[in-house]
Structures are given as structure tokens and as C-alpha cells.
Length: 286
Image: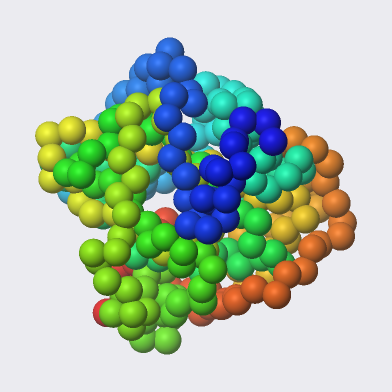
């Protein structure tokens, strides 16, 4: 164990999530905020989302509103360096082992007063793999409280089924809490100060409400997996070649031997006619 205690690891194994305060220096957090301002200015004049920026439905070219910065590790050296730092990787190695691969990265924006919600879902419904040693690290850019759209999770659901995320026979990226026998009062809000990180298992049920407060809630996600977890055919994971896949290694050694685990899997197919970010996909639910 590099930084986690046995109690923290046991809590993650049992509940499927952790919140670790004071993991990212405030100097880095301030630098990320400056990067966000740069991308918000880049959105000025845009009339549609592109391969870098995902726009809020209420976006206007003269009044830019972002809901996601796509693959910030590819367009921001600061966020790329943070991704490969021990601030992020040390706790993940404690949970998943020494050989780690990036699945993807994104910076979800919940700006004050209008930040878009994310409906209840399981990440693993989007990208089933041969084993479930996959998690998301959330870097808290702004203090997260009860009113500004905190990430909410259902503890222990990472040990249960992969629920139906389809609507009208099409993958819609969202699930029905009532059909899953889950009650809102059992959800836990992951509240934390800027500089903290959250970790949640790829199978845990989670979501977040619209930000109706006067406080921004921006959360940088690095989705990371064990190197021996390989995507199942039909998953939304991009896999063009083993060479390109291995460029996603964050630490340790790649392998050509997938580890097969006895875990529940659903295939996210067929895809909607316009499959974009989770915000776009979830619009297809009826």
C-alpha cells in the first residue's frame, strides 16, 4: 500500500467509493481553473459542440456555456501531468495494482445556475470489460456541497447487477431507480473541498443533479483500469490496435493476456442514431 490505509481499502471494497481530501496541491487547482477559463473563451463563437468542447443546451455563441471539456489530457499539459502524478496514481495502484491503463478523461462542468444534470447510470454499462477493476478518479476543482450538483452514489451497488440502461430498444445510458429497487434516500453525496479526489467503482450506480446554486461545481475525471481488463465486443471503448491501446498505459507493464472475471455484463447496443457524450445519449430515454 502506497498511501491508503487498510481501512480505506476495505471501505472501498465494501462500498465502492472513497473521498480523499488534500490530494492535489492548490497551485495545480488554480492552474486548472485558468485552463478552464481558456477553454470557455475558446467556446465563444461556436455554434455546435466539437471534438474538444461539449456545449450546454443553453449555450449561445455570444454567451458561451460549457458542460464538458473532452480529453483534457490531450489538450492541457497541466491536466496531462496531473493524470500521471502520484497524487492520482498512488491510490489507484493501491486499489487496482501496479499496471494501469487510461480509459478516458473528461472535465465535467456544472457552472453556477445552469450546470447540466447527469442521470443515474453505471459506467460499466457503457464499457463492459473482461474484469471490473475499473474506476473513476474525480479531481475536485471547486468545493462540492449539497446545493451545487454533487456526485451521488448508491453504496454497495458495485457488487450487484448491471441494470438495464436501454429505452425503446436503444441504449440510452440511464437507468430507472424504481425498477432497480433503489430509493433516493439511500444515495450518498460526495461532498469535498477543492483539491480532494473522489474514487468510484465503474459498477456503482451514480448521478448528479443540475447545479441551481451560485457556486460552480467542476470535476475532472480520469477513468483508469487494470492493464489486464480488455473491452468486450460491443463496448463503447475505442480499440483501434494493440499498439495504440498500449499508448494509454499510465504505469507498469501492458499485457496480451486478459483476466476474465465472473461478473455481470450488458452490451450497450444498439447505439442511438446520434451517439455523442453521455448528455446526448441520455436524451434518448423515454
